[in-house]
Length: 103
Image 1 (cartoon, rainbow, N blue to C red):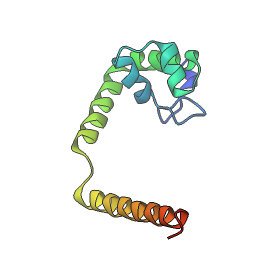
Image 2 (image 1 turned 90 degrees about the vertical axis):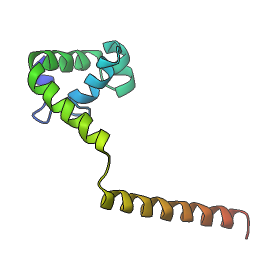
Image 3 (image 1 turned 180 degrees about the horizontal axis):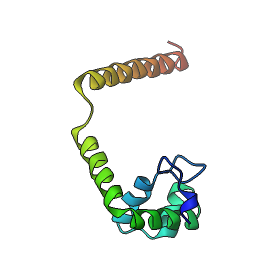
């Protein structure tokens, strides 16, 4: 079943990674439910779970690193750009709403 996992830790032909599958599996989801929410087959999820089990030490080390990076959040300069972008988005929405209301 390993052939379903590519060299970027993704289910071949998708952008779904083994870490996406692992997150749901760690939360107690069944393979069929994981497959449904991620839009892949149950056999692909099982292949990802098999890969995870066969490479557990390496996978878990990377997974912990991913979770730590998420916990740290964005660096200040990225967060400032994100906020500016969000403000431009909100201004555009207000402009669209103003035009719809004929103002």
